[in-house]
Image: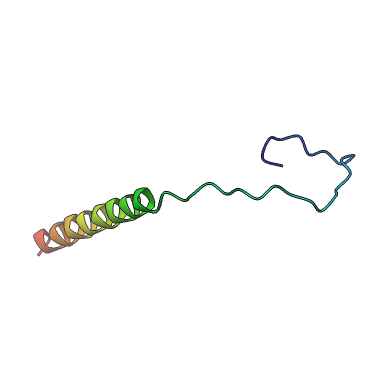
Length: 54
């Protein structure tokens, strides 16, 4: 499926190769933290803009 080789004519076997590669948890956490910080900054900008209106 991932290689894009699955077609309606493909015979399915139910077998798969398990990926045993270790997950890069540190990298995932860094991305989550970066997204959180960006969201916080966005909220602050919106709040500041709303407060400037009054």
